[in-house]
Amino acid sequence: MSQRKQTLGEFIIENQASFKYTSGELSRLINSIRLAAKVVNHEVNKAGLVDILGAAGDTNVQGEDQQKLDVYANTKFIQTMTKRNIVCGIASEEEDDFITINSQDENHQNKYVVLIDPLDGSSNIDVNVSVGTIFSIYRRVTPVGTPVTIEDFLQKGNHQVAAGYIIYGTSTMLVYTTGHGVNGFTLNPAIGSFYLSHPDMKFPEDGRIYSVNEGNYIHFPKGIKDYIKYCQMEEGDRPYTSRYIGSLVSDFHRNMIKGGIYMYPKSSKASNGKLRLLYECNPMAFLAEQANGKASDGFNRILDIQPTELHQRVPFICGSKNMVEKAEEFMRAAE
Ligand code: P6P
Image (tube, rainbow, N blue to C red; front, side, top):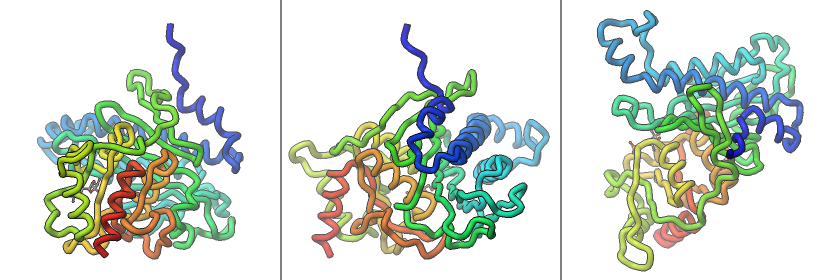
């Protein structure tokens, strides 16, 4: 009989000692994210049903005011992390400014800040395509005992202590890193536990999948256009396959397993691209590097970028190391 897989809770306890801040607070924080993931997963999975039933009026099947799912996910993740009294501040794609969490922590003793995209790709919900939650965790840099400031959130990505995503797909997975590799856990909805299904995830150094919205092709920089044409050329192991879901988490997850590159470059329509540095690109870049992949803006390592604004956007190229380096080669040649 095959041995039972380790649960996420068992994995956290077993690996807690490897984390240099072994106060157990980070473990409690990952556990709070685990709980929120299950709550959001339940709501995402019945979205179609709720939409149908909710169409009868302004309330849903439970008689609650029907909320947009991304607002719902935002509320649930913030509530869960607040109740666990672990973080001192939260920033979210759904919130204009950061939130100071003092709840029971009246004297601001909590040490962690979390930045989150509560439901990335939420426009895919209406067409039943997978979406995801992305999170990024730092230790505060301002003195414990004082309210958090914007400085605690505008840290370089290479200061992250943990990052991860939940993908609400054909199965629901939580994939995260604390700087010791990347591990994937699959939810067994029947019992509500996450099991270690993808230990030590790695990007293949090469891949044959490129993910980009080619509808923007004419607006891309020359280097990106040249790289896309390179991907399409009949030579060696090319042409590659184009796969673009319109959900960063889903494209990233598939490319990490199969090998591939995801690009959301700048364009004449979006001078810094579309993706947000703090709660999309930094966490995905941390995961990519921990999985032997690479992430850049086409020229610079994402994790070295000094943030200047909470919701700033950066061009994003991420995936198998050799593919990212080839794309960077075309970007430099076109300069
Ligand atoms: P476009 C979703 O809105 C998102 O932030 C990513 O998840 C996704 O890869 C990208 O934007 C899709 O953007 O402009 O190609 O529809």
